[in-house]
Length: 185
Image (cartoon, rainbow, N blue to C red; front, side, top):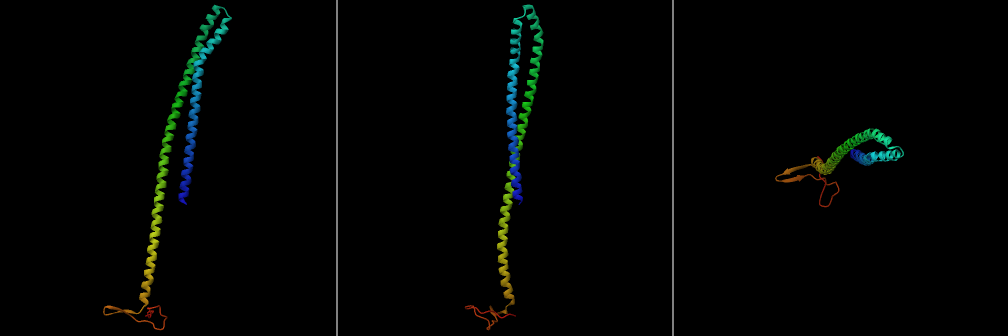
């Protein structure tokens, strides 16, 4: 009964660990894709903004265009700084996810060895217990047979006649081949 509970707990733990591992891998993959997409967006943003500004400024006079470029440089630099800061934050969270995934893998490895050890111990205890049960059943059967023989001997009228064993036999009892029942004391 305990073995089934242990196996059930081990199976549940293995399924939970596998599910956590898959979830961690999925989150890591999604996070990596999001980081890559953000990096591409951050890298493309200044160029897109400049291109849009150039198109818009093409219709405006050269002086106005210079003034606009000067005015846009600061906000564009701020957007680039913010994007770089967000990128660093995402890289830090990716690194944290990798560390957590490594810790989880270590936990899974330890849990696997623990479950295997417990199952090995249970198997050895059950094996030894089964053998001892069988062995002592044989010993008890042998002792019961010897006890029956000793009880019959104690009830018989037997004594030593010199160096031989003599018995008083009951001639009224039925014979068993060459054997005759002994008379009770």
